[in-house]
Amino acid sequence: MFQGINGSDGIGIGQAQVAIEPDLSYTPTAHNNPEAERERYNSALDAFCDHTQAQADRMAVTVGEEESQIMIGHINMARDPFMIDEITNRINNGMSAEQAVDEVCDMFYGMFDGMDDPLMRERAADVQDIRVGLLANLLGKEVVDLSVLPAGSIVVVKDLTPSMTADIDKENVAGIVTETGGRTSHSAIIARALEIPAVLSVPNACTICRSGDTVVVDGTRGEVFVNPSEEDLAHFEAEAKAAAEAKAALNAYRGKPTETADGEKVLLVANIGNPDDATAAIEHDAEGVGLFRSEFLFMDSKELPSEEEQFAAYQKVVLRMKDQPVIIRTLDVGGDKEIPYLDLQKEENPFMGYRAVRYCLANPDQYKVQLRALLRASAFGDIKIMVPLVTSLEEIRDVKALVEECKKELDAEGIKYNPNIEVGTMIETPAASLIADDLAAECDFFSIGTNDLIGYTMCADRGNDRIAYLYSVYNPAVLRSIKRVIECGNEAGIMVGMCGEAAADPLLIPLLISFGLGEYSVSAPSVLRTRKIISEWSKAEADELAEKVMKLKTAGEVKDALAKAAK
Ligand code: PEP
Ligand code: MG
Image (tube, rainbow, N blue to C red; front, top):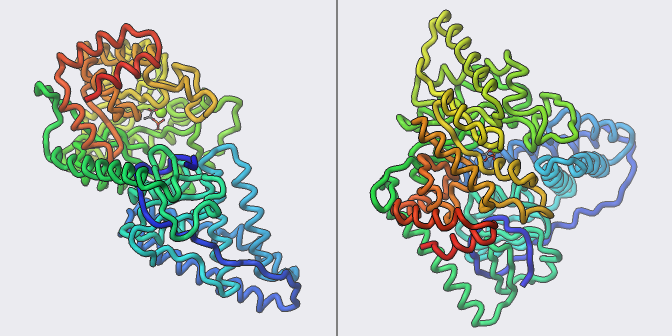
């Protein structure tokens, strides 16, 4: 067994296709005809961009609009005036087009690879893609073509670049194994969107596997098996079959209300990152949107999105979701979400720094652009405004005051909005949890952000492997916090939801039922499974389990007890 990183869940079994990259070596030569060399570079650039645009168009249909933007990002990077200038200057100084491309891509690669932010670091793979595309064009070589593989292929490749992933024919690829890349790489994001099992960063994968080998990719556990014994193969086939059946069986929950075994209804909604994700939410039968992370709109842009641009995005979501509720979180910048053009200063401790609502309230004119856009879109459906990283009552009061100011402006301009728009808060800090009773008195709803609440409660960075053992929702400290927040909200008569990953945790769901959680906001592919688990528990059963579990003293004991009780 070879261990890697879990990139995309599921078990894939098939024949390895080790994708050998083309030989892009060349002999560096000087030239004395910059014009001809520039011409070669320009036509390579045009050919690369045309090919990439075609990939993006295909991806928009086969994978999704959002993922196709990754390829558009390549075109933008390759056509970036700074990159073009750097390459052209080198050519003008006598370098060959190949060498100039190589050197400048090296420079960009080093720049991204050296960044602290893992998301920015992953952009180094995009630079690599551009380098290979441009050099292959210059040298007249074919790049690896994954669009013509036989059925049941397991793609084994050193570095699966986004453009390779874009070529993948979902019908023929049973799994993916790479030697590099992490969970946040674009390739992993696309593999998950395609629902192809993937294991990343398996050392020497291309040497371990040979084309034609039988390979099992366990994307859930991050494990790869090469030429397993017949007995092991039978075991994996049975597991894959059971997983496929379980997935198909979930279709029985489509169109059904979300309710406990004894008929208590709750709301089951989806987390989305951009307006196009609303389509996935609908396809997976979500009953609305519980978290639209609006910061992605800002991150995908080169400058602050205007009121019109934001209005169009929010309106698009709410129109797609028809009468269903759509909770839009205002800009949650900072921490691991960097927005370069905001020019925020580097901080010693960015997760506890100038971010989210703190940044927004310090820049009220900028914040009002977003609030006005949200209010205007609220005339078209059930939009609710949600505030991230709240730690004090003043913050919610200040946001509400700004909302009122925006309403007055819109009144004066004769622009329609929902005057009763709800304003709620995320509960994702220990401070917000401790003052949940006071916050409940001034908010229209809560949504518990367990991703951050766990981290801040346990003082354990959510991205740090060495302390991952502390980062668990099953810690009694976290569970008591969640219970308290739900009780405070319910006592005040406001809706309490959860939009952190824990809302889809099969083991945790009975506890959430017992605590009285009213809304579960999960990733679109988790909607039906969450509905199924909720339907398997009655309130009385969940209460009995919660009473026992809440007396336990450690995360380990809690997890064991929940696993034992799981249906
Ligand atoms: C959370 O913290 O639980 C949450 C949903 O927000 P994000 O993951 O975007 O920080
Ligand atoms: Mg958060």
